[in-house]
Image (cartoon, rainbow, N blue to C red):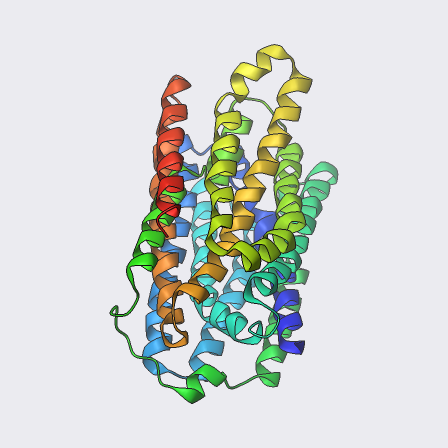
Length: 384
């Protein structure tokens, strides 16, 4: 329980760092005069990061070492804590984009192996509820980070905003090292040595993976959202960070309830993800039209869109992660989380490039794309 709480606090402080920076990622790139495609390039960090989730999961599974699991976890948090403050000194959109990519590398290294630890220490309290509580703590940081960035931009500048994120980054490293010291050996690795094999993952896992691909393709990346909110002159820079804060606050509020719901109805709770993703995508796509109804109407619609976007992210971070632990036996979980991360990252990155192009086209075109991918997602979920 102590390790579970510590890992929650690690995610809280680390999320302050990278979610604070990501909240204005697209608008910062636009501020540095980057083209719209640059927002998709920055979003491709998820491709790199989630691809590395697969790599780190395979290596950790092969080594079957608790030290390897914790090593990837600590290294990943250290990279995030270092890369984000350096954004304060980005003199060009290319350098800023590179640092956003480095941060995603850190995320990719730590996520699957950390989730294995979480799955182990939450076994007695219920995985849905455990991942939900972890996500709640995670999103407390995701709310505080964008709020801090918004305040620093309002009173000072982007540079001071990024430098302010160095403090929670240092705290996250200290906390994860403490968790390692208290729980150095993973019981699942002591009981049996995992083997790298895709046999035994099962049909349901592959259907689930395909549903994840389509959901990620239709889910608009926040790099696209923040870029076009500035490009369309819907919100100012600080307001874009606040909109992201609304998304993260919504994520935090629903994390535990949907985790508890998952423990009761299992995979049926997954329908919430494509429904909320579709609603947020449609609202975002038609934001320029809503501007014609007045600035206040467009602002309200933007914050509602952000809240719906946050619901989808909450599903990704709680019930979709918990599902993997229930779909797979303990010895397959690290590999399963790696596969999940890989397909999620690749498809979300591809989707960000698609949206970067489609959002410059007439509104029905991106709306049809979003509707098609997300309805197909719901159909696949019914087959799990």
